[in-house]
Image 1 (cartoon, each protein chain N blue to C red):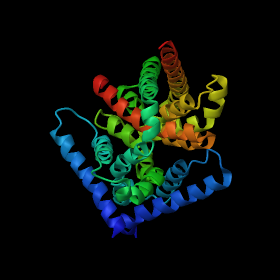
Image 2 (tube, chains in turn brown, yellow; image 1 turned 180 degrees about the horizontal axis):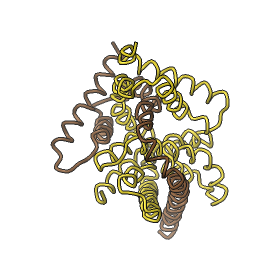
Image 3 (cartoon, chains in turn brown, cyan; image 1 turned 90 degrees about the vertical axis):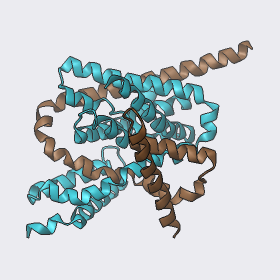
Length: 121
Length: 226
């Protein structure tokens, strides 16, 4: 019953997030609304982490598995990939390095700036 | 004979078996190249192509698995919530880093796509590639992207991050574990995070936080540009 209740809670949050998506005047992904909704429920104490722990662990630990069908549909797109795969590889490699460096350096600068401000006070 | 593949049980069973083989191989070889998801995708695709099973038949089971994607994304909130303490302590650098990283990721993809003259639907498919798969798909799909291309680009990016993170940390002298963790999470989401956890507890926690926060920021940015 415990697991069924946890599934019920998480599916209810997902269903509510679809309702919110419909009401919102702009397009915003329902899955992310669900994430924000669940976070607010946890912060507000409406839900306790124990209420959903096992189900959440199950979903998070097996996250990769749920993408198998989405990935397999690549077989319908072979002709697109055949002509562009070299560009795609270059784009992925370059932008991954750029993202890594920009994030690391902006975090470092921000932390240094905060420390300097603290020392001046 | 052919209708036996049209049952949803077939698609689910095939996916589970293929993923199970992927996990076993990953445990045995312990390299980011042996990603269980990539192995599962290759195995299932091979079975469908070799036995000439229509994708639509396989996808009857696939749709059932897809149903768990939204709940799995929602549960990222649980991962963020358990790290509330670090979030409170470093909220400002985290926010700045994730915003800068998300902008750098989308900006660099856009510029490179323009440089190579990549068509629009492909560009849209690649734009959210640094964030975790469910969020990336929910950005690319309504904007006219090709979902499987997004999925493959996201996984490939994650594997790249997992392989190159230790090298990049040394090359760019990222000595602060907070900065290193956020950089890994922002550039290579969950696959990179599994590497960050190996590097240290702070790196792992920060990387996990970056997945959720970069996801939300990237959604906000894409609302502005798409």
